[in-house]
Structures are given as structure tokens and as C-alpha cells.
Image (cartoon, rainbow, N blue to C red; front, side):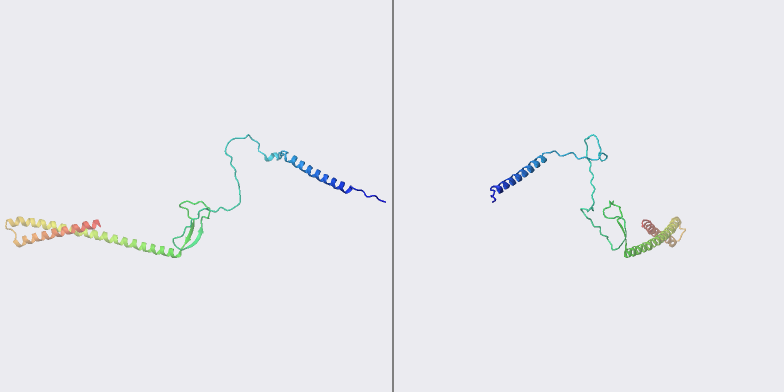
Length: 204
């Protein structure tokens, strides 16, 4: 007849608890020991290291990255007239100066307007040349007329002075003497007018 063994289950349970407690305690001790270890110096390849003496000075660090530059301020440059873009000389992001040509445009309407203006300018220049020639011719005519009137006036003056001497001696008719005086006065007035006309022609 078998005799039941008492206390075996309790002993097994106690042993299992002790094993688990010992394992947990060992794990805790191992974690503490590992955390207190100093980090090992990493090893690098000698060819990738540059050995030199430490110096004081600015340290320049260049960083490269992929991306797109976006301007902070965008300025639109509208055209004064309608047209078609024929050629783009400068693209966005390019440094420009005050005299840089950004693009080239064509406008048939504007070109026609410019052609008409050029035709009018050419016609006006031709008209101006003709007008100058006319004024020059009129100036020469006025100079000739003024010279002729002045000559006639000087001749009438000399004739009147001669008649003055003859009239004192009674050697000239009274009508002829008066006629010479009237002629001199008329030519003197005309000479003054022609001189003013000539002066005006020169000033204009």
C-alpha cells in the first residue's frame, strides 16, 4: 500500500519562487553593472581621419541639401503694351542689374504704330528742309529788296541835296524841287520799313 507524501507540492512551489527571485535579482544586478560601464571608444579607419594640432579660429561648416529656393518677395513686371513673348533671356532666380533685358516681346500693332510715326517723322523732316530753303530764299530776296531801296533812297537824297543848291540860285523849277523832296521822303520811309523786315527775317 502506497503512503502519500505530504509537503512535496509546497517544496516545489517554494523552489520555483526562489529560482524566479534569483533570476530577477541577477537580471537587476546585470543591468546595474552594464549601466555603470564606460562607453567604449569607437574605432575608425586611419585613412578617414585628419590628425592635426587644435587651433583657435572660425569653424566653417557647409551643409548641402536638396530643395528649391523660394523668393520671399515676388515683384511682377507688367508690360505697358500687349504683345507676344519671343525670347526669355533671364529665368527666375537669376541675378539681374538695372539694365538687364529680361525678355523680348513683339507687338504687330506697336510695330505698325512705330512705322507710321517714322513715316510721319520723315515727312516732317522733308517739310522742314523745304521750309528752311524757302525761308532762306525769302531772306535773300528781302536782302536784295532792302539793298535796292537803300540805293534808291541814297540816290534820291543826293538829288534833293543837289536841288537844294540849285534852288538857292534859282536854277531849278519849283515843281522839280518839291518832287525830289517828296521822292526822298517816300524812299526814306520805305527804306526804314525794309530794314525792319530784314531784321525780323534774320531773327526768325
